[in-house]
Each structure stands twice: as C-alpha cells, then as structure tokens.
Image 1 (spheres, rainbow, N blue to C red):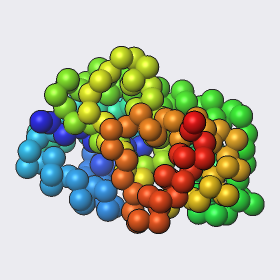
Image 2 (cartoon, helix red, strand yellow):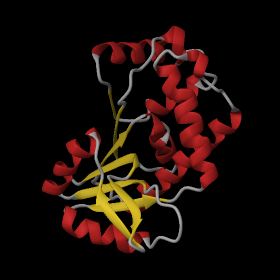
Image 3 (cartoon, rainbow, N blue to C red):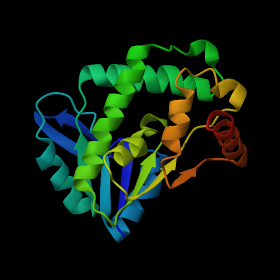
Image 4 (cartoon, rainbow, N blue to C red):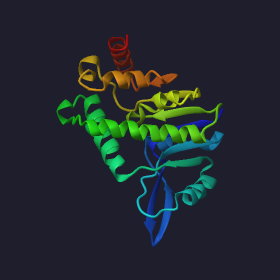
Length: 212
C-alpha cells in the first residue's frame, strides 16, 4: 500500500537564488517524521508549494523527487485563497479557537467559503493523483474537509487524519458557527488521530453533542 501524505505545505522551500529557482528540503516536525517513511517505502506528498511568480513547478519538483525518493504534487493557490483560507479561516478562526483564544477569532463568512474551496482543490488533487489501494493521510486543521469532499466525489479510498493542535471541549467548540459541518466532515475519515487522550475525549464529546 502506497502512502499519500496531504498537508497544507509541501516538505520543500522554493526560492530564487542567483537568478534561478531552487528547491530545498523543508524543516519542521512533520517533514522530519514523514520524509524518511516516504523515502523508504515510496509514496506521494501533496501540498501547496508556497511559490510565487513565474516558477516551473513540475520541473523543480520532479528534480527534487528523483533524489528524495518520493513524489511531490503541488496544489496551486491564488493570493486571495491564501489570504482567506490560510491566514483567514485557519489562523484567525480554527487556531485561536482550538487554543481557547476566543477573543482573537474572526468569524468572517468569506473565510469559511475560501476554506471549503481550497479543501475542494486539495481533494481534487488527491483524487487525480492517488490510486484505489493508496492510504491517504491528511494532516492538520487546514484540511479537515478533504475527506468530506472526496466522499462526495464517490472516492472510497482509505483516509486518515491527524490533528497537530489541541481539540477543544464542547463549551468552546460550540462557539464555532460551522461546528456541525466540521464535526461531520471529520467523521468522514476512517481514522482520526489526536495528540492526547484529552483531545480525543473532547472530540468524542463534541461528536455526541452535535451529531444525532
């Protein structure tokens, strides 16, 4: 079974040096943990490249893949999508609310719409480049709706999700205007993982309270 990792960012950084675009291995806990797994067994990593400007992404990523031992597939996002989905919904709604920083939340409807649109883009990329016997492992709060989108497309591949931030208790989670939609979307995954037992218990409590 091939592993397909899906995260907000690809495990690389792309920058212009001496007039040329260059791609380098990224850093961080997720890259450190998963890159060796993909390298040893082969696989695919799907994510946003973060690149801006006239970049020949397919050539750059193909060159990196040959040495990394696994494939990369970029999801292209517009500046508006990055602003509303990433800086907006992900970082002005989900991150502060899940960390009990409710006063920092900005529940703007356009953020929610962009979040759904970008999750659909990721799901379409997964559907196009994955295979029926792949295991698709989606990471973190930026992409909680990917499984929901894939199921709506009729994709029945095995789907796992891991949340890298805390999951809040019901009294905090219910302050999210789209709480029921988020819970139902997460329940479309075959497996949902959390950092702690408390996070898992909070999720179960929220699901029992919001899903009849």
